[in-house]
Image (cartoon, rainbow, N blue to C red; front, side, top):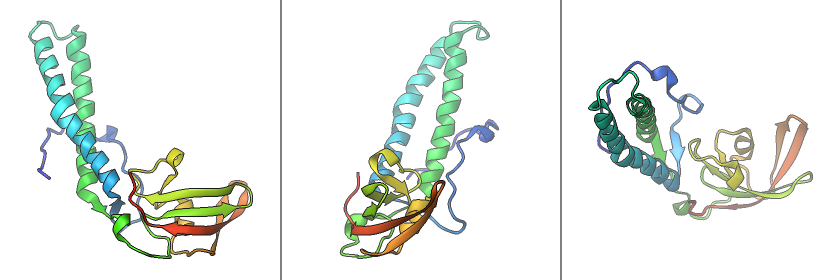
Length: 183
């Protein structure tokens, strides 16, 4: 990926904080998650930013900038885009892509696995263990550093994990472990 140099205006305290990763580990991500981050970066850098720059240039040519809403809000949005571009660029630089579809037959739960679990309280649930940047609980995608995923890692079908929850300790039985391509 080509390096992108942006002017640093000292607003780094407003950058989104990087999700917490255990020290000394890489930022694992699935190919689908990597493509999603790259697509967002490309959309911001090649579409939204150039359009916004032309709007700001037009607004600046209209004269008094102190009361020019297009100019003021355009500059603010440009700073937001630049911060997000820097953030995405850092995340993509740190990312290590791991494709679960090429893992083959593996009985243990590792990054990229899709795990079917059973709890007495909630019945059967399916979770895919993904990178911190692509976690989406509504889709069953949980971060590999989440407490649930950490309790499942290295288990096999039939093993039981004990997870501490606000309501107490919950036992979770691993019913199935699959490695499939994730979107």
